[in-house]
Length: 212
Image 1 (cartoon, rainbow, N blue to C red):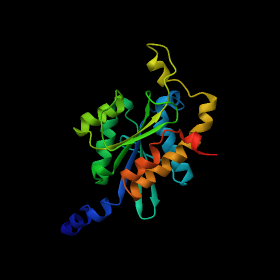
Image 2 (tube, helix red, strand yellow):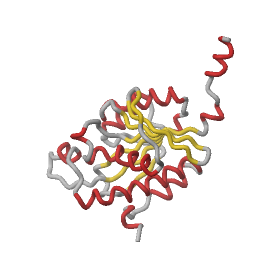
Image 3 (cartoon, rainbow, N blue to C red):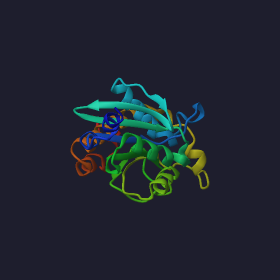
């Protein structure tokens, strides 16, 4: 009986290869919900709503699962606050037995104009505390990250206040379109690979400029 249970609990490599972990970075709490720093949460919320799935609270975060053409895409919103995002990422990678090359992290980027997308296979944290902590906890930077531009319309020394402030009304109206573009690109990453996803997302035009 014990041997049977051990066999049943042993991860199936074939299953793991079809599982993906997509992490949207943000801070929990109503006071942060609509802030620029939380665009990672916003993107996953829009994806879950469009897929008719609901987030459930678990250890280190809220998680939802999207089943899409044989793929199992786990959406994760860490509850650790931005600066400790790595704890949530490591825990869910291990719990779900998902290989690191099936990990993609979505975050905000001050250095990009609002709505601009940049997908990379790996790279530096670029000064983003969430990416920095994930890199420290995983002890490498060999995982995909998708940066979403939030602009940099702030006076010198006003960076923290800017990222923790709400989007403008005009920008809020564009989030849905950005989320649709991001979701399409991440699905391409799951089905075809990151090279084609990068070609799809890394354009000079903002997502709001590509739709007529």
